[in-house]
Amino acid sequence: MDTTIFKQEKYLLFALLMALLALSLEHRLIGSGQMLALLTTGVLVFAILMASLRVAHHAEVLAEKYGEPYGTMILTISAVLVEVVILVVMLSHNPSPTLLRDTIYSAVMLDLNGILGFCAIIGGLKYGEQSYNVDSGNTYIVMILTAMGVSMIVPEFIAAVHWQTYSIFTIAIMILMYGIFLRLQVGQHSYFFSYAYAQHPHDAELGQPHHTQSSAKQSAALLVAGIVIIGVLAEVMSKSFDIGLAGMGMPPITAALLVAVMSASPEILTCVRAALANKMQPVVNIALGASLSTVILTVPVVGLLALLNNTPIEMAMTPIQTVMIFLTLMVASINLHDGETNAIEGMTHFVLFLTFIMLSFLGV
Image (cartoon, one colour):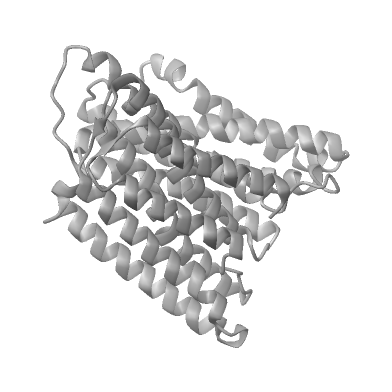
C-alpha cells in the first residue's frame, strides 16, 4: 500500500489512536473525577468529528463514482449510520426515553434550517438566485411531513398501553415508505433529484477530483472502518459525557444536539462547497435527504431496540417542538416551490435555526 494513504487518512488514524487509548484507559478516564471526564468527552467528540469528516470524504468518492441520485443516498445514509451508531451506544448505557425524539428533532432543525439556510445565504450573496430541480424539494418535504407526523406527532394521542403495537406499526410504515421511496428515487423518478449545470473551467477547482475504481473500493472499506471507529469512540464518550456534565445544569436537549451535530458535520462541509460552486441541487438533496433519512431510518432501528428491551421510548414531540417543525416545513414548502433559492429565503430558515438554538438554551 502506498505510504501516502497514511498522510491522507491522518484524521482517521488520529481517531483510531484515540479509540484505542480510550478503550485501554476507560476506567481511569471516567473514574478520576468530573473534570477529567469532561476533558475526555471533548477529546472524544473531536475524534468523532475527525472520523466523520473522513467518512464523508469517502462517501463523496463513492457518490462521484455512481452519480445522482446514488451520490446523495450514499452521503445521507453514511451520516445516518453515524447517528444511529452513536444513538444505539448512548441508549445502551443511558436509556433516556426522549433521546431519540430530541435527536431527530435537532437533526431536522440543523439540516433544514441550519445547513440549508446558511448555504442559501452564502450562495445567494455570491450568485443571486441558485437553481435546482423543484421536484426534489417538493418530494422531500411531503415525505418528511408524513414520516414525522406518523412517528412523532400521532404518538401523542396513543395510549401508553398500546405503545408496543404502535411501535411495530411505525417500524413497518417507515420501512414501507423508505422502500417505495428508494425504488422511485433510483428508478422512474430519479430525474427529480438531479439538475444539469453548465460546465465551467473553474469547476474542477471547486468540485471533487475524479477517482478510479480501485480508490472507490478503498473508500468503501475505509468508510466502514470509520463508522466502526466512531462506534468505539461513542462507547466511551457516552459514559464520560454523563459524568462530565453531571450537575452542570445543561439543557435536557444537550445530548441530542451533540449527536445531531456530530452526525451532520460532514454534510455541512459538503453543502457549503456545493453552494459556493453555485450548485444548489446537492445542497437540497443532502439537507432534505438527510432529514428524511434521519426520521425514516433511525426510528425503525431504535424502535426495534426499544421493543427488544421492552423499554418504551417517548416519540411524541413537545408542543414547542411541533410548532417549530410545522413552521420549518411550512417555510420550506413556500421557499422551495419555484426551483430557485436566494439569500432572503436562506435568512428565513436561518432565523428559525437561531430560534431553535435559543429555545434549546432556555431548556424549552
